[in-house]
Image 1 (cartoon, rainbow, N blue to C red):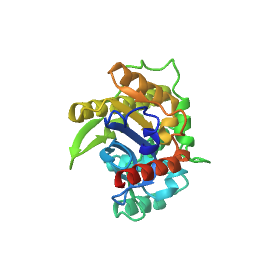
Image 2 (image 1 turned 45 degrees about the horizontal axis):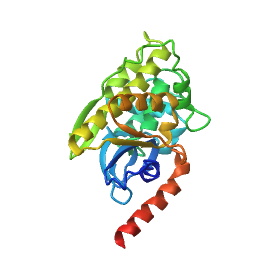
Image 3 (image 1 turned 180 degrees about the vertical axis):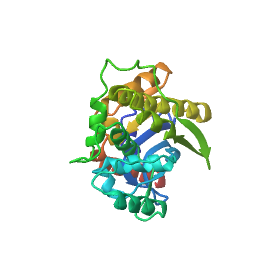
Image 4 (image 1 turned 180 degrees about the horizontal axis):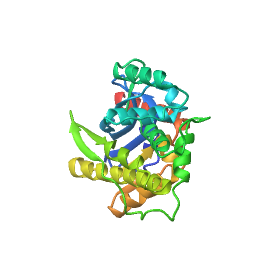
Length: 272
């Protein structure tokens, strides 16, 4: 994903400046054996450094969560000590068994995927608890973002903390608000999108101060979300960043094979 995005960053390689690429997706197998999908990489093809991620959480049922957003919602609630009663298609006994399996880490892979955060938010606000196709929850969440909602300046701040040189964004502040039925579904959907956009801006500022990076790119299926992507671009440009917006290579999994070619090409050039 990062290498595919790098292709559209103009003369980044000629200028020998690092590029910061956010790769937010559903799930992808990470080098540490967990499911990634909320990462940021610094550098260039063949020389990427993973510099940021989302707070990981245990995903009950693994791949089932893609079609059952309520599983991601339950996981986030349980991770933060909250109950989640709206477990679809199960009775109370099965619900108890599912939580016990989650507590014992049975079929509960760890993940940092932002796509699963979107699933969880869609389920928590009641937009989509079960899906007939993967991505339905995030799409319905995006569709709720009407212009008559909260101001674009309203957002929740996600805590940032370094863990073994990796900058971790904590989603926990989002959960109580997503559950707050006194707010409209539109306002909650907008708060979710605005908060993630501002989180990207905060991360970018951290890495500009630390590494001098000024060029930011995006890749991964999450950035098919127009509300999130347009908000992020506006925030970054206002702060003086140069933004690489993918136009030729798809940001979703359709661009992965191109990224693999980029990786091979840069590594081969380095070896030569």
